[in-house]
Length: 371
Image 1 (tube, rainbow, N blue to C red):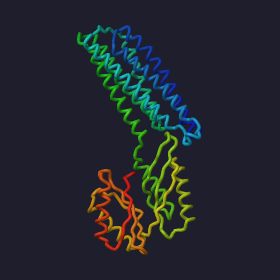
Image 2 (cartoon, rainbow, N blue to C red):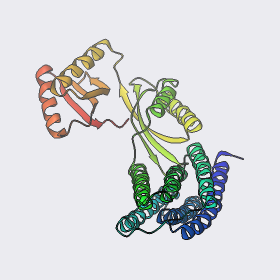
Image 3 (cartoon, rainbow, N blue to C red):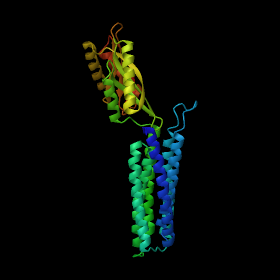
């Protein structure tokens, strides 16, 4: 079974297990809730019903994401998985809001709660099932990089904790006249809302696009360093079209005197190695540099000092090339996100460089700190 087949098998298997387990929990908690009159137990059952819907959405979203690319969507439909994860998050939020509303109503209109030892035993066993689902979905969600499974795992953990509070409330309600059940429901609803909000934020972050992980950037640059005459690795951008399809762009430096065929062969080898080890298809941009020249190296160092005097949040300069024939210098400067007014920085930097090097002209690009 290859990697993609295994991923498909795990997601669909977990979704079916989640459906079956939550179906059992819905029936068990609904019966106990109706028999005891506990609002916390009844809405715990509704919460499990929403978990069933979450499992269905996860399974359906994955099936849709595996559709073959089309003329209008040549990169496939993998991002549907992110959409399904977002829907799961909203389902969790909806359940939490409803639970909050009813719990507040019960605080002002309390109802008697009764629970037998058998009911307590049934509710306690549901906690173990939720812990099982949490461990299963979290572990497999990380293994196959499925946000929907990871969110389902987090939701299962919150359910286990909320069910624990529910059981405690039902027990305490048998020994006190205080409206423990309603306040327990309020606590559980707040916990579910927190889990749902966190899941929404994490999923939206993935959809918007995130900075590449430091370890991924390090691995990419390590590959580049193994394929001379390539060096560096700048403006690394990775675009995800679903967890199993990633496309990236990267710029590298090469000596100005290097031959085109030599550069092409090195890029092809690096591209294949990155694809094999990280599963990311990269396209390359190239900077021709002459910074092996001692004069150029010294000038590069001095230019960096000038830029630092203008703005402290300068991360690096690269693509540094001095055209001696017409006294022209070209480079890229990477600035931190604290630099808000890029136009002002460009004007100030240009003026400072021309003062320091009056016989040279400067052309430079300002790059955000992509990676």
